[in-house]
Image (cartoon, rainbow, N blue to C red; front, side, top):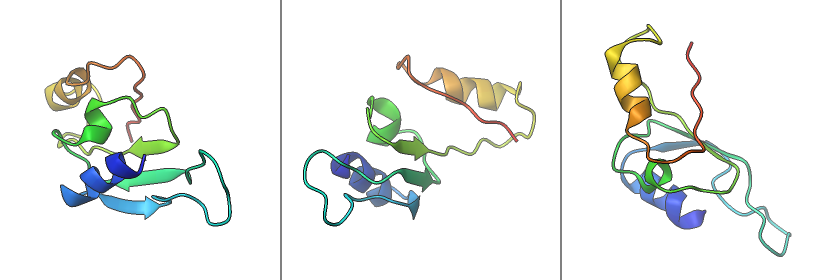
Length: 86
């Protein structure tokens, strides 16, 4: 998780919450993380994270059925993906 978050931040994403292992816990724990300003080319969008990381990708159009929104969704080759349109 750390590598995926670090890659996203290095490429322009912002950590809105989390982004690290919680203090005082041993083992494979990672704080629930929200990343904003994610874009193509970030590992967090190209690899399955299997962790509590949500990557927010803003598309230009407000219409959920817009070509830009659909193209962005179809860039993922992963089966575990979700979209929120507001």
